[in-house]
Image 1 (cartoon, rainbow, N blue to C red):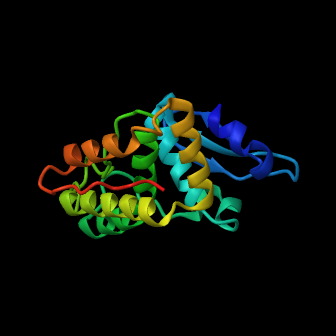
Image 2: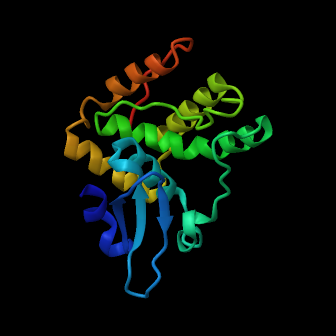
Image 3: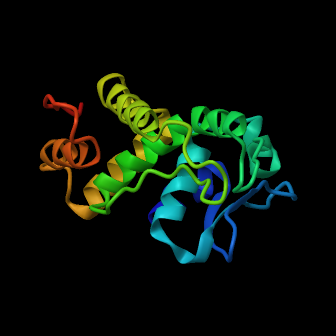
Length: 183
């Protein structure tokens, strides 16, 4: 509801509950709607797919699944490194959206039957560093709109910094956390 109310008219895009696999389908008709399809009705899947949409530029939003390369579960170490590099920004946004919505975030290396994470601790640090960079320097425009909408709807705006820092300590206990202020 929040996503569709915010972006349906201006961007002709709707969020849709799907089945096994998430997918992005661009509009096929001039007056049609693009669809962000999230898996099984899972909230985390919706936030993750929205994150990819928020990063995708106009050209990529005309392509199925934004034209991104995707190699399914069972990736080699080299494929996993490429996957993790491509996932830093979307998972950073997903983490911000999760905290704004009062939901728990779980980092995803998405490679259970392969070699696992290339370096899960480094990936977690990179996602957190990117999220902190977004907080310090600003989120992409659509992501910023959605982030603010989530904080207002869920009433997390006032306590966001405290929860953000607590979540950072939970996800990265080995790192000391300095207070991050949200603009």
